[in-house]
Amino acid sequence: MTASHVLVLNSGSSSVKYQLLNMTDRTRLAVGLVERIGEDASRLVHTPRGGDGRETTPRVPDHETALRALAKELERDGLGFGSPQLAAVGHRVVHGGSRFTRPTVLDDAVLAEIERLTPMAPLHNPANLGGIRVARALNPRLPQVAVFDTAFHATLPEHAARYAVDVETADAHGIRRYGFHGTSHAHVSRRTAELLGREPAEVNVIVLHLGNGASAAAVAAGRCVDTSMGFTPLEGLVMGSRSGDLDPAVVTYLTRTAGLDAEAVDELLNRRSGLLGLCGDNDMREVVRRMDEGDAAAELAFGIYVHRLRKYIGAYCAVLGRVDAVAFTAGVGENMPRVRRAAVAGLAELGLAVDERLNREQSSTARVISPQYARVAVAVVPTDEELEIATQTYALVKDAG
Ligand code: ADP
Image (cartoon, rainbow, N blue to C red; front, top):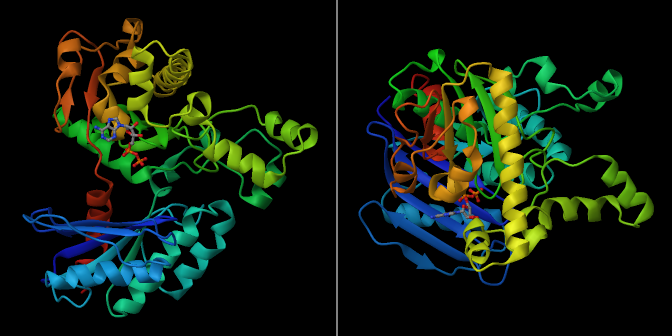
């Protein structure tokens, strides 16, 4: 099979992000984004390799229109859905439940199974499915692959995956920790081993994916053994607008006593909590800027964020027993020395420290920022979920054609 291009589609509730990669040299042939789908002012930005971004403002009432619009942009560069170079489309799918533990070629039966998982990811899976359906219609002969955010966490041992609730009830409803951000944790843990010049099977890594959504993962010899997101992406670390860990009795209290219904609690914890709920800003850059001006709410929000992060680092040191590296990734993890420093400050007993000069260096490449003497390597490792999805997709289809 000579076709070597893979189109990666990440269809969210109001946006579709896409990248076209050439898998022979892993270069990007085009990257783009359709945003504000279903709103008045939709926007499409398409950037071909070596060219300037083309921005248009088409009317995009739904995902079907969004995909047709981005397909047209690719077509203009001779790289559309009908291109003989296109080997496959790789779709990010957020929730694979217990059923999908590896990338899966999409057919009608797989689509139906993903659809059945919708109640577990009501915001994400329908948007992912919308993208898949339209992409299949655009070229029915093209292989399409689903790559699941949950898959990397399928190796969690039962004692980490199960909540301590009645087993029959849990099993009847699929209540367990699935974990998310799996493509990022897989990519970053492997890259961290490479950075240390070791095989993934030789190292234990704590990955801290700190973006708008945030999660931690404990990866032992290349296999994930614990992660902070659970049944949904709400559990764990403090995020941009999500609360992370919370006593579940708060939910029952709010519904019984404060008159909030299930929808209102869901909205409160997913969209009006985290940094946003604590200080009115969900962007960590803004939180830090305000903190420097002496803003008490921003300082408290930062403090709560960092406290939770440190608890997970400590917990995963205990889970792993021996830690070789702690890797920071995603928007906050890659770009905010302040958060990295606070996360490991005073943890020399655990072998953790950062060299402040290395920590402050601005760079977009993977690097170690701990001092030579430190027992554990602290690293900044840029994530690349699109490359990971493309790699997994291509591995599945390249020999099949
Ligand atoms: P997601 O993919 O989950 O939407 P990102 O990984 O892009 O999120 O992270 C976004 C967050 O990273 C922003 O809310 C911001 O607080 C933080 N951030 C800090 N510095 C930067 C930067 N230079 N570029 C992008 N995000 C940054």
